[in-house]
Image 1 (cartoon, rainbow, N blue to C red):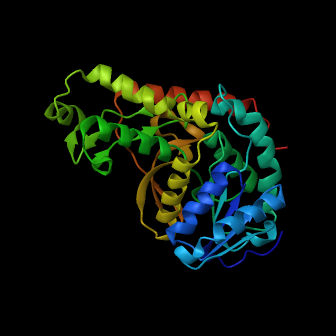
Image 2: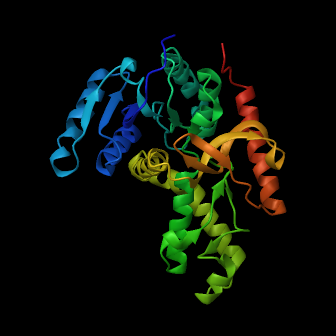
Length: 321
């Protein structure tokens, strides 16, 4: 194992140059957060092509060194983003991907571990909660420095759909999707609000009174959003790229932003030793604080069921050799 390198706060590494990796790299190039980005892929020519293509837009963005590299190039990156994994096919759930992608992580994470990496590991590949747990166990990194993109995208979808429903700026909608990034996710309606006004009260201000029907429809639309996109265009990548950019922004700028990232649970809500998506304060050191958000009885039960389902999956997967 090598000695840890000094971290370059202006450098990011992206492992996996498929649709999600390439879109994330493009979003990060435009963000101005980093001045150096290395792309790594099992197909080096794919990484080279994406690096060339993205770098050709630099003249209209900010100066940035973008190149294809190897694992030796990641040691000083502030953030390593892992998007590598098999694609989700039409009719396939995120959890159907678990066996294939855990296998892929068994080839990636040891390469990071042997280089004594000292930065933040951001897992984006699906199923993200299971793979974040896998990365944590295989890497040996402190748990605050291993996080998943979680339900940051689902929460954005939730707020966007609610904003459209209520004819209000989605940035003024405060609501979370928690639990699994997938079919057992939970829309937290009990604390949802628009600029501090409880969601049902604001609905009534906009002439919406059939709350239960609307809540079921909106939660269903959020949960099925990825499937709807995959049916139409075979993959989702722009939305998650923006979510990746947002998480990196919180880390690099040390914003202490509250984001529903995948992080390790330690007994809250009766859930222990599993990573799933819950709001946390995210800053330069990764996960700084888990937020003790309020859930009503049904939400808490649904969260526990989501965690139990994820635990069963992990128990059926041989993570550590």
